[in-house]
Amino acid sequence: MTPTSPTLTPMARRLTRYGLVVGGLAVALAVSATPALAASSTTVTPAGHGFSAALASGTTADFVVGAVSVTCNTSTTAGTVPAEPDNASPDGAVASVVAAPAFNNDGGACPTSVFLTTATTTTNSDNGDWTIALQYDPAGSTGTMTIPAGGVVTEISGLASCTVTVAPDGPATVTGPWTDGSGGSASVLDFSAGVDVPIVVTGGFGCPTAATSATFSATYEITDTTDPASSITVTA
Image 1 (cartoon, one colour):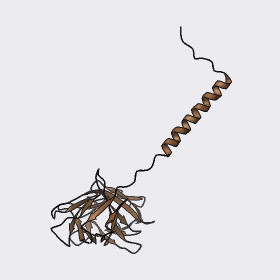
Image 2 (image 1 turned 45 degrees about the horizontal axis):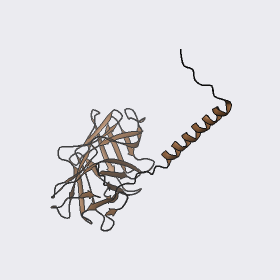
Image 3 (image 1 turned 45 degrees about the vertical axis):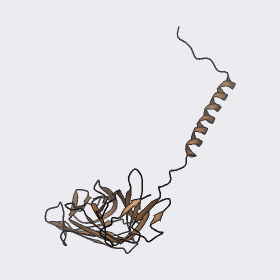
């Protein structure tokens, strides 16, 4: 014989629904009451030391906009680790202002994937600072580069004539893994997996004007310019 469900009285049904509502509310409250995980404390050393960043040997800085790619074999910037006590944060990242990076190909325009077309990239700090913020994490530290509004402008010329502006509406950030160096070896900030940045493209035929984002990839080696025997490191 097939078992049947017991018939509930109207009062029992109301109590059951009430119990479900209260139980669901309790679960929702428990979930919403769970505190957000705070960022780990971060210390960047050596405090007050200057540093430079350049592409890792044999690598390139690449921008992909729609079907168009731009490849530069040189990209550099420089900055200074904040002096004590500003080189440490109890609950977040430590940021350093850096120079607007250079992007070129042996000092000249960068080649593109479009035949007989090259790209010239200029950067600026007109609307704010470029920064690199380092965040310690026991699972793997990270570095976040902030690009100020309109901080990168690439002019594509040749068979196509286009202008690509990065971060057109406000600052943009890109984040990648950070690996400490030691004993004077370079630390590494790695965007090689590709990070998206907002863009606006203007121009005529052949320009990817429908694109609203570009993918940027690069791997930077960070060296201590104050004391080459030291390495820039990120700890708790």
